[in-house]
Length: 150
Image (cartoon, rainbow, N blue to C red; front, side):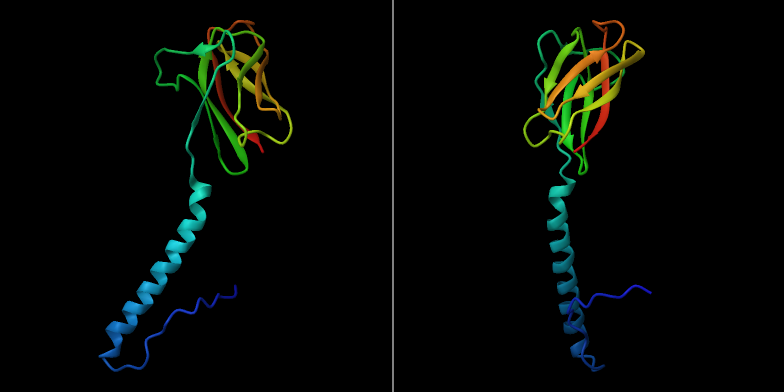
């Protein structure tokens, strides 16, 4: 059986009714403070704010039906960096560059969808996201929804 942690919460003293409400209020306040402390500690890990990425030369935001994110964005997702969006009209080379703090520790190759076929995208430790290969070489669209290990 797991060991319980003693958090030092006040415990109601005795069974005399006048002490009961005050003791339970103190206990509730202590628990509330403890829960708030844990929430404050976790808040930075739960910040899943997206950062819009500036597109490289020749690439532009995909605008079309389907409700896709138009352009590229990235966010810190704990153990990985997520990159998401749809772009078009570029060719082999740099798609965008991840900002400092949202870069992997090593370069990785990732699959992507280009005009309905498989493409390869490289995310460099420098932050550069590159369109490595795909057919066509200048796609009607490039859809990215990748998680890159930090």
